[in-house]
Length: 241
Image (cartoon, rainbow, N blue to C red):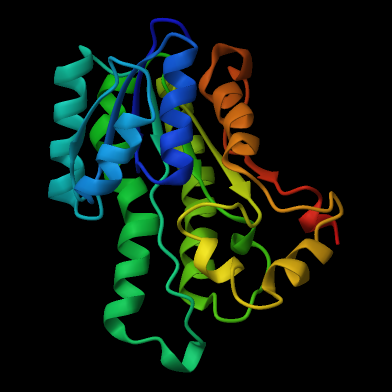
């Protein structure tokens, strides 16, 4: 990864860990997040030289502008990492138009808009990795919008991989089970929730951001050159239950 130019969309728990990991292996990194405080925290956790700016990549205009800024700052683009996500945790009967659309825009549409904007830069060997979730295949209560967005994301990865393979671009996803990040910590902190979740993981614990880093680095590297269109579970065996 040394010398590779990497854009990371999403500076939260996983995004921040990925930014630091890419920088540690010698990549040039540009991170975006719509929340300036989240972005600042991500940049503070990274080695000097990691660049970033605020951007709402849930809109096409925002995604387009973010890619333009990343390319200008890095001098091109070799790897796009999509680590954007929200989970509103609503029962099906409580989902309204606004919450549904927000979840699809942030979790799924942002990937489409970013990848489309970056395609020309990535042609001839570029890599795209998105953070999906085991919720894209498992059915959890109160995860209707989220599960739908991740299932759609998984299929988008597969179709994009087929369409873009001839351009030399590999598209893959990493699908964690419950991982302790700002996105999940409030939910996990509910009484009895941690114990109930851990019981369903054969490995006997929930995931940590560093568990996701290794698979993403592999998929972003030339060592996974022949891997495309895959959704790789990083779940301690959760999906085997």
